[in-house]
Image (cartoon, rainbow, N blue to C red):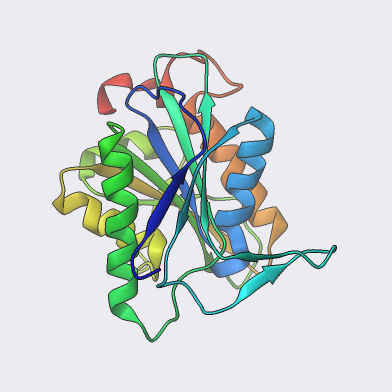
Length: 224
């Protein structure tokens, strides 16, 4: 395999889906938060993305079965006019392979744009000296940031977002795809369950899931 390969597992038709993406990162916030979302919505596996740019090892489960690293896409119908496409990644590329990050972001965007996706939400953590419930956001425009601060987030001014959660938004922006990164402060850099759950709760609130009108994503349908 010398290039990315996407394996479709469903023929479900998605209407302009919003991509929600979580990758291994600070506190493992992104992965845990999107897994909470997948479970709560009973989302169904939609596709798998395999790439030779991911690290050169396999995962092995409790039964000794090995599997290639991959990115899993899950589809969920929120009951409104929009669908969610939820991406959870097994790994990020090796830190020294900067080009790989750009190529994988391109592969993800090619796939979701072909499905009509015009808005992306990524999730990550950032180090904090003390536990806090505040949620921070950075986005592709002032309008996007303003919409998310109206539902309780603070503006993130931490200078940079390292890895796929930030880079995916940066590349999306120049492709005219809007997006936001939801950031939760972590005290445990390896696995911070509380920070991940805080990010998950804010994500549900922002998407209008379980609070208010379930048909109104973020309460601002026009931004999507």
